[in-house]
Length: 303
Figure 1 (cartoon, helix red, strand yellow):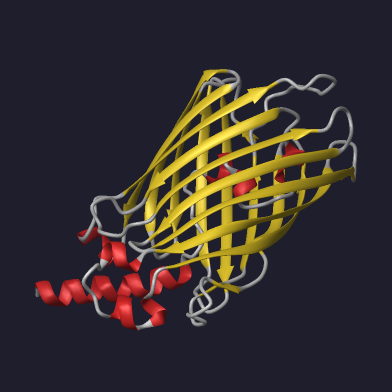
Figure 2 (tube, helix red, strand yellow; figure 1 turned 180 degrees about the horizontal axis):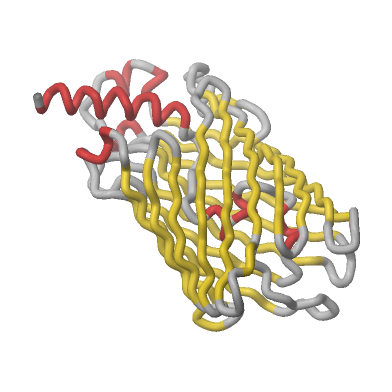
C-alpha cells in the first residue's frame, strides 16, 4: 500500500510539475503586479510588496519563491511604471532568477471607471544544477540533457484591466511566449500562461467589507485551474479570507494593517490531493508598504 501511495504521489507530481512552471500565489489579490502588468494603474500610491512562498513543506524538491515588486504613478499623468524581481526554485535542480520592467497607461471610460493596458519585459537566468543534487550520477556527466547549464531567456507580458474603486476585471499573459530552458533539452519549454481575474468590493455595514475574487489560469496542455477566494475586511484593519484552488488545495488567509500604509499577510494551503500525504502544507508571507505620491489622490486601495 505504501508503494502504491508513493507511486500515485510521484505520478501526480509529474503532471503538477508540467503545469506549474510559473510560481503560483495564494495572496495574488494583494500581489497583482505578478499576474497582470496593467495593475499599477489601479493604485495611486508608490507601493512596494515583498512576498515569500514555501510550497509543500517537508517534500524534497518543493518549490520556493520570493518576489519583490514596486510600482508608482508618474507625477500627475495617467502613466504608471513598475518593476518585479523574482527568485524561483523549481524542484531540486532548476532555479530562475529574473527581473522585469512594466509600463501601463489608463484612460477613463466613465465617471468612476478606467481601462488600463500594461506591458512588461525583462529576462530570467535559468540554472540547472544536476551535479549538485546527483554528484555521482553518470547521466549528469555523459548525457548533455542532464548536464549543468546556465541560460538567459527574455520574456514579455501583456495585460488589460477594467476597474474602479469597487471592482476590477482583467486579462493577462505575464509570460507570453515559449522558450527552452536549455539549448540541449528542447522538450523542457516554458509555456505561455493566460490568466483571467476579477474582484468586487461589497460594503457590509460600517465596519465590514467583503471582497470576493476569482483567478482562472490556462496553460496549453494542462487543465484549467480556478482559484475562488473571499476576504472579509474588519474595521479597515484586518482581512480574513479563504480560498479554494481546483485540483490543489483549500487556503486560509489573514492580513493585518500594522498602519494604514503597512500591510502584513500570511496564508496557509491545505492540500486536498494525494500530495497531502507527502507534505505538511504551503506557507506564504507578504509585506506591503505604501507611500504618498505628490499630486495624487491617496485613498485606500482594496485591490
